[in-house]
Length: 200
Image (cartoon, rainbow, N blue to C red; front, side, top):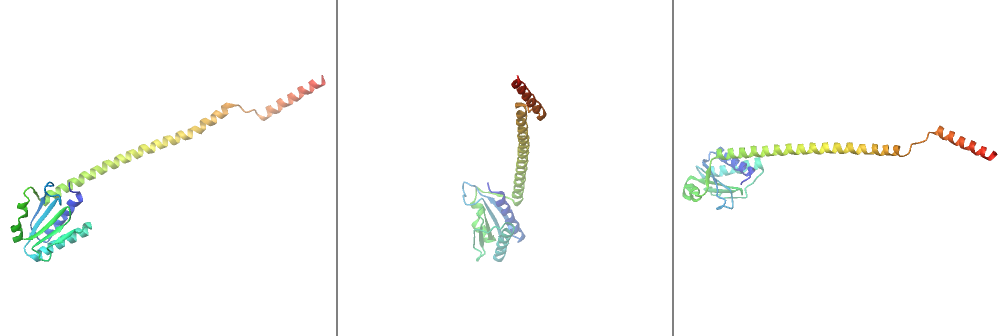
C-alpha cells in the first residue's frame, strides 16, 4: 500500500496540474501484479505544448517547495507533446490532446482502477486520522507505563529508607548500654570489697 506521503505528493501534483488548467485529470491506481514499477499514473492533457511544459513546471516546483521532492527523471519536455515525470510511487503523464487519444494509456491499463482526486483526498484524510488516533493511543499507553514505573520507584525508595531504621533497632536490642554513674558505683563497691578481704 502506498504511503500517506506518496499519496499527498500525488494530490499536490494533481492540484498543481489543475491550477495550470490541465484538462481531464485522471488518477489510475495500477494493479500491483501487473506493475511493480509504480503505484499510480497521473494523466492529463494541455491544449498546446507550451501549456504542457507549464503544467510540468508547476508540478515540479510545488512538490519541491512543499515536500522537498524532485522527480527521478523527466522526459519529453523539449517536444512538449508527451511529458513524463517519474516520482517513483507515481508517474505523471502530460499529453497533448492528440497524443493522449493516440496512445490511450487508460485503455492499455485495463486492470487499473480510475480514482478521482476527491476519492484519493478522502482516503488520505482517513489514513491521517487513523494514524493520529494510533499515535494518541500509543502516547497514552506510554504515559501510563511511565506513571507505573515512577510509582514503583517511589515505593522502592521508601522501602530502601526503612531498612537502615530496622538495622539500627537491631543494634539497640543487642546489648543495653550501662550508664556512666552506675559503672562508677559498681567499681567503688568492688574496690571496697577487695580492701576488706585484704585486712581480714
